[in-house]
Image (cartoon, rainbow, N blue to C red):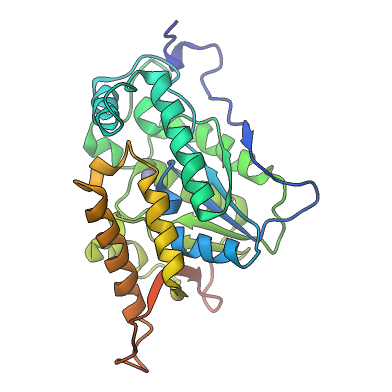
Length: 304
Ligand SMILES: [Zn+2]
């Protein structure tokens, strides 16, 4: 039965994690990457995550909006499903099947990166409704606008869920999205990460890509933020793994690219652009360096 999410007796979703491929007892993760949606970690930070894991460090990707739609779809969500379904043969656009498809894609992508994964039971913004039955994110403007004030309980629940995740110590590097482009789920995850860790407790930020390809959008987020850029070099095999991982998200490719070759070229060009930030001492270095960029809180500056 398609029970509208807001019509349930408890309007907040159950955010307890349901999926955990590893999390061996007593082992602390070195790096935990918070991914608002199934593909954000691979798109934004796939090279660096692969590099960390390849050197034997424990890397976990926590995908926050990994739950199936809790009820009927808005016209906006149904349009997303039609596009995503077309990317995987047009047969899997039904609501529950779409989430199953996306979870299968995610498992393959994280395996390509050599990292572990965990899914939280929160629906994507396009699926959520608020008490009263209104869909707060039913058009592009609201999807890239502020978090609806009626979602405060979701924010509190997510913060508590993150704080209760096992295997995360004080030294664990937690990497959250900058929320470049302003997608509401990215804003929600960043805010919950900051409420959980504070800006001094090993919290780092990644550049939401492809949104961060827009330099103006990126500057709007980092200028005056008290965050410092830290460019990390990548090997060619790290970028190759990133391309393979992104290719696993077949339902999502058409959102940004016409075909896989265009995606691979964009990923490599982006890594080269970030690599140029490492070339100031050796401008003629060959092969040209590849990189991704994190942002760290400035230790000299009080937390905002
Ligand atoms: Zn996203």
